[in-house]
Image (cartoon, rainbow, N blue to C red):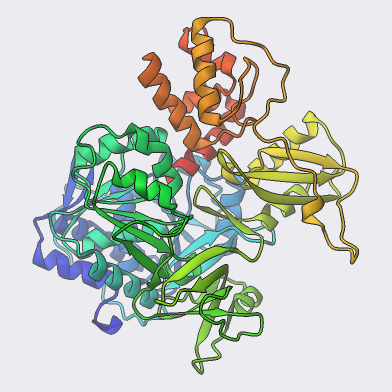
Length: 608
């Protein structure tokens, strides 16, 4: 089916005509039929049109996961606009930059969020929880809008190497191409249910929203409780009989031990992406479940997924390959001179075809740098991914790593240059380098700083970064140097940087005294893979992060019989504080000084 016949919202409208009374959307006890969803989206689309929204007009949307969120996203597409997701959990300064950079003049939100959003007088806001009348069942036709494949569907902001996030402009044609490929690949049926759990500020969320609605299947919005405690995932999968689920491999690694009998019975397909999928993890999964496993790969600039591998047998390498290109996508492995690398030789992956973004919003120089002329197809472009890969003889692509300073932390894309630029804003800092280090607990961010030192400066730098960056982009380890090591030709010698002491306590060791304290210390030591844990040791300084916190909460419940909310785990980040909380001695009110950090950590969990 050609794009001219079917932008995504037209495909959904066709499904509405075919199954108007079928359940389209589920959130807890609330449900919307296809006809009800379409009716409310049409009504809102006409309102947006009255306010000047049309093709290539960007509309901000900042809501918690809700029925209103889906109505708002669909309405923006129906009127021809492009949605710009603004995660309300992001730091205020980051949201302010995204609002200003995108140039939006209209923001869809909810009344409870309006006061905390940095909205100027130039931005009009619509509070969908007050605007949408769920009792109004008057049918209304969708607005008539003419779109071409190059019109924008959405703009998602990703980490940027210059110190500011950059907006990636995704075309309607690219979105349609991906959705039709995925529909053909996964073959959803009306009985299927897809769990929408990925934060909508990440492009992996896009197919979770639209794929089920193209097929008459059911879109299940993850409950607010899951955002607070990811250990509830399997019970939610079982309760809602989810059949299609997307996960980062590190999330599965953390949660697989918690699967109880029968909780995976409804699942037929697991899709992985965002980071390497190990053969060992696939084998662990196969011991409990034997459904379809897909390994998906793709940068935001190439519309969600560039390549796909259906894993039908044992994985024959340590890390699963990223497969073959999806429909209407071209992939090349090229050297520095844009010459094709021989099969088996490593080179940079370039992507072309129908999946390419239009470019970076208001960044023509960066667009020209990353989207280069295609030497093999006159008039076309290729996107330079920065990923080091190689082709196998059978046409499957192996992922080998990055060739630049972009990394992924638990599946979340990060430009190290953005973090360095933020550190250099501090008046005491002269130079800064940030690298990702692999540890027993996964990837950790480490910062080397020239200028100043001490715990007070570390606290100031963390606070400074927390103003603009999500929590997962704030380094956990800080080292202070007199000067950065240089190579003979004057460049930074990364190999000569002193290595951090990750996973070792920095506070004076205070031994656990009570039986509860000793039990908690044993759980912490096992999860964090450290020799011992003292009462004053900080969970995050020992290498802890959101997924490990989830493991600790689960084991405390299972082994000790104590329920500790995940939010409390982030607040009570020393062993002593956690023990006091369980004993009922700790005030459970959240310290206002830590609210921003807590929100960032929860946003990281929701994104995974």
